[in-house]
Length: 221
Image 1 (tube, rainbow, N blue to C red):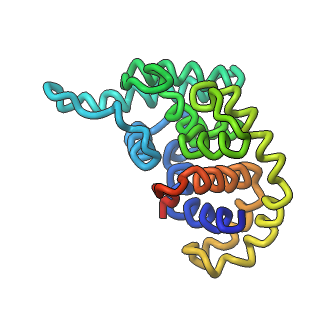
Image 2: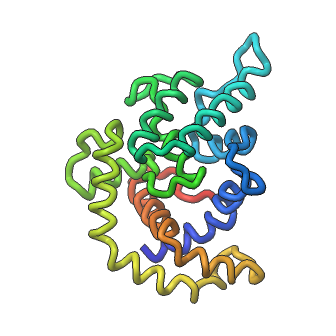
């Protein structure tokens, strides 16, 4: 878990910090379509947004539409689960890709909502699904059932809360070992105290565990 804490601290500075600030520029409630496209590429959920052969503007048009749907979902008063399902369906219409969730872009919906400030949404990622299945002993419908995924994620977070708390206590003393420059250390220490930061450390832990023996992407740095 300490490795995951240090790893996510680097990822926060190099990647997530930028997207969290730029997805809604200058405090705007409207999602920036260009930034959303960059976020999707970085988080590997941009597959269905490719440019059509006969329409060179199709990709950018899709991102504008996706950004509008995300803006609407983030501003909705519905519970997180409803927001996730609604956005997943709408994104599937914008960029249809057949997957285990049909044409619904469930992973993309969770990632987009989280970066739009909906931090109660649990980010669904195949690596986390594999890790949770291994920890629980059975995979079940974790990859296609958001409610089940979020519940199991929470159960495992609670089971790891001791080691996670220990890693968070130790993290400020490890800043010299990160890529975070000294003039950002004060900001970093404040961020380390946020609940969402602890959640993302646990995500990082699951993603690393879920890669398995075959290797794969474990770091964004």
